[in-house]
Length: 381
Image (cartoon, rainbow, N blue to C red):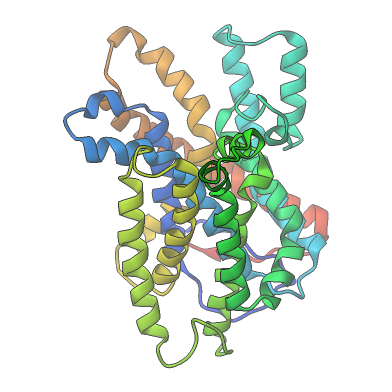
């Protein structure tokens, strides 16, 4: 039986139940983004709803951000050591991230896709330092999916502050904050309706779906706040998810989250502007996660799905370099994206499993033990 590392550091001691269904959600979120990057749209012209659903696959990173905030808030108390938290997150994400950048650089060099040497040095330095999402046109260089790790690094840096804020802000003020946030997003339209268009406001609106880390902060904070409220309910403390109607609230959240997310994902930009849709998805994804938190279905809690969730990070961060290799190998066969996809996913899942088993977990354990000087607990899966 392989051993995997829990996501909370050794100074956190709680008896809260694990949330295996949410581990499985990570696998589906990774698959959703990967399929979107595979560009199947042209093969689905006869299925417009499915085509639009696939075109919305980039919002899978929004689900990742909400889920990240939720899980971190659930696992880490406000009394946690910030230093140990940062060490745990570094050990969790950086080893495979580092390997993905090295592989991408090697493959770009082999394929003669390397930019100007000075540009290459700049983009590489920014990427290895996890700050590429802060610099225009650098977020998608080297290994394009890695921009989300730069954004997550920003979230991790602020998490000790955000968790304190989430503990203190009550539901009414949280709702006020979110309404104010939505009004800011609608500002370009409100100004235009008042015959005072603002190029600056419109420019900010147009950049919202980009890679700039601060634009994504509210998505993460929504997950943190919901995670705090859910943890309170599990511990029996008062909160919007607590009380005798706890089960009913979770069921309603699951239904509303699933239906709301599906509807939004099938809407195109002609029905709702992408930044507005992404913000609304932040809320429906949050409801969905709350509803799934105590789900005990045999499928989501199965060993296979748990392993799928554990290797999802490797799948996500490695899918670009592995895709470069597969593109080169299969080019003579002139296969369509639909024909390539099953083979690509099979290879990717296998590679991610091997990486997880023989590199990701050992590296995580080594870094945690080295940087903290403490033994690291593991649990079987």
